[in-house]
Image (cartoon, rainbow over all chains, first blue to last red; front, side, top):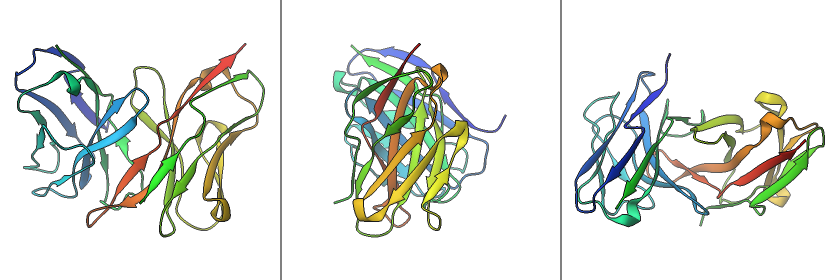
Length: 114
Length: 115
């Protein structure tokens, strides 16, 4: 089934540890995005990539990094996790950068930093 | 600056009653507008979208939304709510930023349905 796969589904992480959230899509979409969802704050964009080989910063990029080595994969790395990064993380993709098609979302990764 | 406001944090309606969820936006040009639904523990699913043309758009699951430029609104409606519609609903507007553009999401409206 075409779509976005995120892994892990959930994770408890000790503060200071490094963590990579994985995101893979099989729709050959050019654009990919990482959002975090927090109660009362909605979804906030962390990083995006309009095409393989390029990335950009969103609204809340501090403490996170991304790479886009190929079309399908868009991993999000927390270099040294802090409790404020406790959140639900969603990966999304779109056929083109200009979001006239809307986004397809993954099922999310629930991350707890303790 | 671009923004999206969903004035209602939580709405409760009776099953079979009509529904309207409000969305107001601030955007410098003609926006692309979207409504998404999120069931508990799930990702977001696209309900409908507006780019241009007819200001009343139809979506999945019997939802519709009307774009009103004069009011900067894109309210979501459903004539008769079903218990399975209980979820959180997000309005989004774009594109903004960068060379290609991204979406800005509202903070969401949680819908509860009474039997």
